[in-house]
Length: 106
Image 1: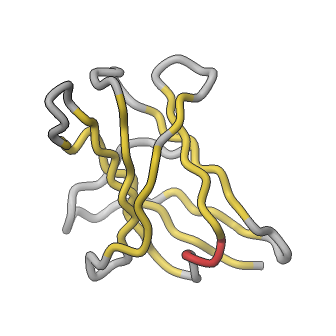
Image 2: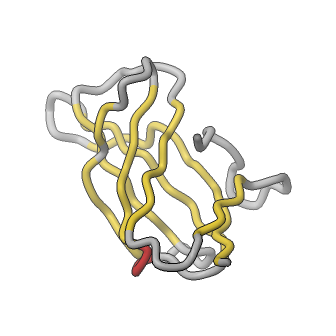
């Protein structure tokens, strides 16, 4: 489970995700404080802020929880930031949370 976390430039511990060999996809579960939007999207950025993936966010069974499924092809060893965007009824996207994490490959 990824928790909303660090603000850019802030020091602290990131969630570490270990990917075993031969895994093709990973599911990232996101904890949100409040479910305020009818739809969500996510943007995955590498440390320099370059977008490496964007896509749909799905509702998890657990309340105040969402998830995304990523192909491991977009992830290499290193640090990432998943930005959760809430879509308003007018179609505008607003940042709803940021989830920093690190990938470690076995």
